[in-house]
Length: 79
Image 1 (cartoon, one colour):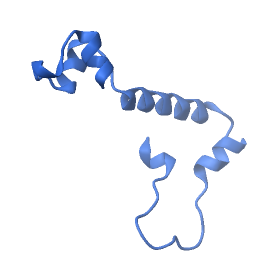
Image 2: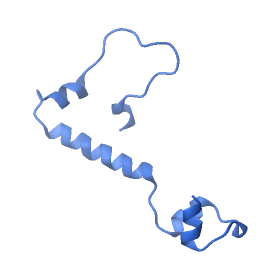
Image 3: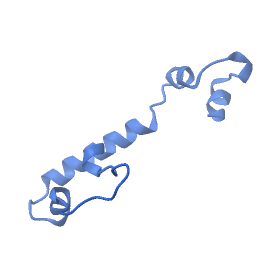
Image 4: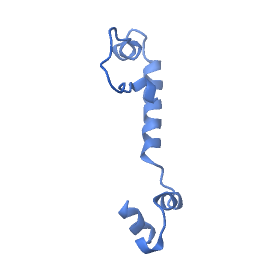
């Protein structure tokens, strides 16, 4: 985030946080861009024919057990 300080005209001695600088520069965080992209993609998939491959993949429920450890995140859970 060093480039944000330089863009805003601050140095480390100014003690400005990265959150304050991003709000001041009106920069949207990357995770918001990703969330809107995923929501737009989901809306696109929902408009497609029910029997198309992307629809079948989205509705697929795997059989069997998952491996031990922390469960992996599914794409539908992130949207």
